[in-house]
Length: 273
Picture 1 (cartoon, one colour):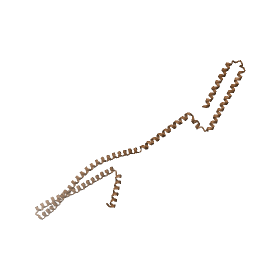
Picture 2 (tube, one colour):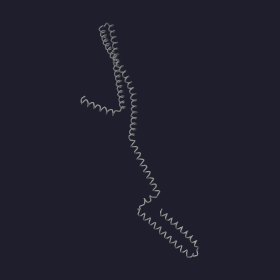
Picture 3 (cartoon, helix red, strand yellow):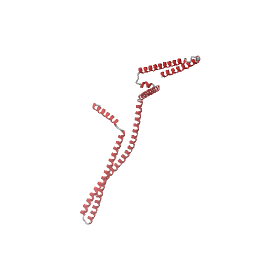
Picture 4 (cartoon, helix red, strand yellow):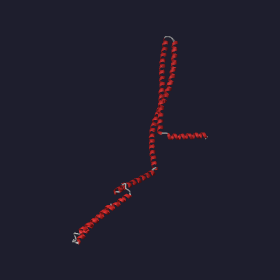
């Protein structure tokens, strides 16, 4: 095989491969069906034209037959009148017309044979078209079913190939969801504990420490004031009550101490809070 032949063969094979990929079988079947229908219409038109020609020959034959009858009558009349020359001429015309009729009959017979053959071909072609139409619809249905099945298979294959990526995406979504849930729970806990009060405040740590010291100093000063007031009260009460029983005095002092301790504990609890 020469270089040109091999090149031509390769080019044809490439073109055929491209055409096979681009071809839609359903469209090809529909096109073939339409072509066969066109052929059937051409056969029908051929039969109609042939029948028309045959009818014309039959009409011409009938006119010749009428002329034969007329020439025959003319010959009889001429013989009756003793005009053999006219009778001969009439018979000659009759003979010519009869020869023409024979030719027409042969042509008509041939046309009739052709017509019968075309009709048989038309019937056969019509039957083939009907069979092809049934096969065409069956093949189209099978092709569509195979195409749908192939599409599903390709989708399933693609899903299998991308399943690992999908699994990782799900894991990332779960991790992000858990982080968001943990953050929401932490924010709720901080909100309930009051930590947001300090967060939302515009005071820094030094300001808060100074406020704590001022609060503590105020409590200490108030405590000293209470002690002083209570000490003066004890002194004033002791002068006019020199004759008070020492046991009663101890009970009073014990009650006062308990009240002071209770108030002091309450102040410390408020400071700690």
